[in-house]
Amino acid sequence: MVRSPYIAYAYPNGIQCTIDSASSFETVVANILITILFVLLNPSKYKERNSIMTVTTKRSPRLHVDGAILGYKRALRTQNVNVSLVKIKGCDNKADADFYLGKRVAFITKAADGQFRVNWGKVSRHHGSNGVVRCRFRRNLPPQAIGGRVRVMLYPSRV
Image (tube, rainbow, N blue to C red; front, top):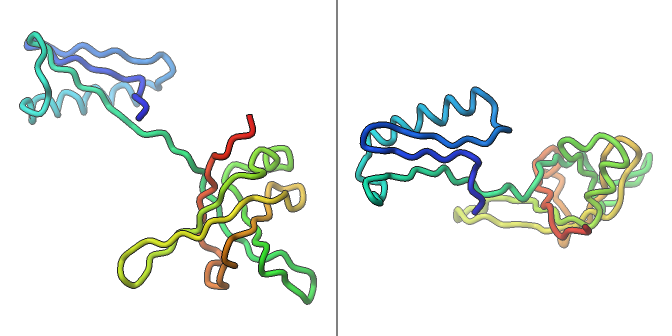
């Protein structure tokens, strides 16, 4: 887990906050108010060390970027169902699409028994110059998946 740049110390006579300079003013104010509420409402949930209670906000790093399935690779009359076209959020040109080459793609569905099933794929190449990529999945995507969401994982890294 990665710690956020915001740490608050709750002393018996007040609260001291340590904030990263990159945080926006609204984020800082919101975090301070949340810390005050948590300390006042739930003082027993924080470990006390030498009369100092430490409150840290943790957030795990997001290892994926959202994408949308546009359809299959196709010509005018034939479509190639083993290659799916995916538009990645924030990817607007060919240079951006080159970063995602080789990255893993997850199409997540919920089964009737409540379990989640994942169809894994891989970004194989770009498709045009507008940031759309071609993906090959282990099992071909069903037609109901068109318009659905996928997660483009930020691994494996080529850096």
